[in-house]
Image 1: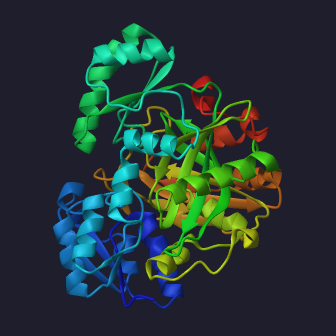
Image 2: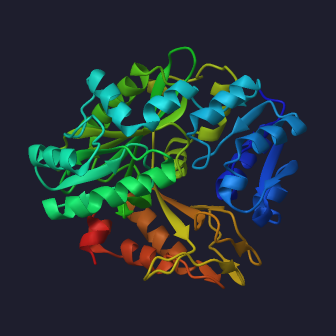
Length: 444
């Protein structure tokens, strides 16, 4: 398939990609910053190359250094994981220029879907339902005010190049909009190099439902059902599950067909995710497309039996999908929780050295982890240190497994969000499958 794959990432996702490559007999290359010299992903690959100082713009976001490492290692493919350079079209273009296979979509598609405004226009043209709003950049607060009055409050102010909730704010009044616009515009420009803002109508009591798709270079596109990502804090996902407790058979088919239609309309290739908001009447609205592997991809793997990284590698190597939509089935239930090194009350990051670490060992518990006892959690990177995925024959059994696994999750030396996860797992709304995107805010 490939002679050697370099993973242009760190932490648990680097380890996860290495695991599949090893199973397939593909040699792997890690890259690491000064802060990650002794990190688990650095030691797990067949080779490892330093790429710079601790800050991401001097290492994991430094395209030249990553390309240099790939050339030195003679890697013929690069897997970007998620985050960092995974949706950077310049990086994908550079890989192509250097005759290195980028394990992901074409740079032109990354560019098209990377702009939320451009993505709205593209999906609208493809007759995919979108959230009511504006599909042109809002240059100033006056134009934003006019748009908000036309749409009707409350509205969601968003950064076109945004992600992770950055540059995004729920606005209820005109006064709030005046305060929010300039601040979010500056944040977006600082984080993404693009301060373009747009606006959408708030869908009340919505579910955040996303569809996993796979597409090869021969026009074959399939979906692998849905993930429910409604449990969020400040627009960042906390818990994901598959299948969704809200989605019935008819809605599942409609979501899947719409996602495939959206992917085909742009000539998409490789793994990707179409994200939707679904209202209480089960109307669906396109939200965005992620042109990469998702953090929450394991829940799809657990209910379908597919290894999504393996499928990514095959597609990137020019192979056709070996299955059709009719071959894809799902069974059981899977729930993923994200373990963050952060204070459970203030949500501030909690870097430090882990002095004790133990988790439940059980066939129904999958632990994607980037740390161990003695590991140092750096202040330079995202505070997510692990993901825990539990499975069960039914959703009820999966929740019981989740409660048990969280109860036996033991970390010392740093603070984590496990108290919050326990609270969610025992909440009535979550147990009943009634959690919407406003669940955590309303639970305060």
